[in-house]
Length: 246
Image (cartoon, rainbow, N blue to C red; front, side):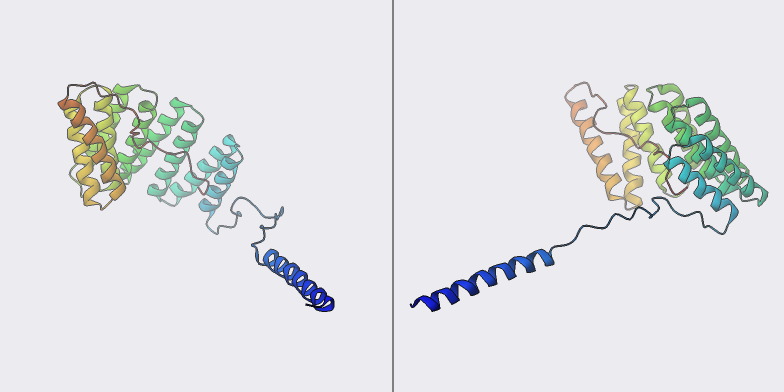
């Protein structure tokens, strides 16, 4: 091969390589631009007055401005009560309770869960009242103060035990199971977890069903061998902190 031909091949080889490298860089996904002007919270643009207060509460919570968030929540409650929307007002009482719980203020958290119960009761919403009782029970369960936790769970389940299967019913049964497990009444814990599993099954809630099946297998397996059964690694369903969107 003569020298000019070799030079031409070499030139086109280098050109093709550079072109390919350039194309590969061009085809790679580009990182998203950082738009500093973009808001990280929903805009306060709701048409309904109460919804605007809820959005404000969400924004204040996101920035840990808790007193302002509580004030906005209470304003929303005032609007709902004026409009006789007690079911919505009751849920906002639950949100305030969750916020106080997030701040580790047990007394005010429980007080607002009780306000939620009373509001649900006025609205003849036994399911909502039972949910608020579960939230009150969670306050004590998380602090391993078992007697009041068990009392709240039992009261909540009594309200809905004859209702069609519902998620609140299943979670109350599950948490009752953990209450009896913690207080070392294993036969009763198994009975509650079994009912919880069957309720999750009726709801076609596969995750809940699988979780209850795992708990029951652990309890029954260790019980048959006479072993102690610590309630570890299988967390009960506790209440979450308030959601950002109110």
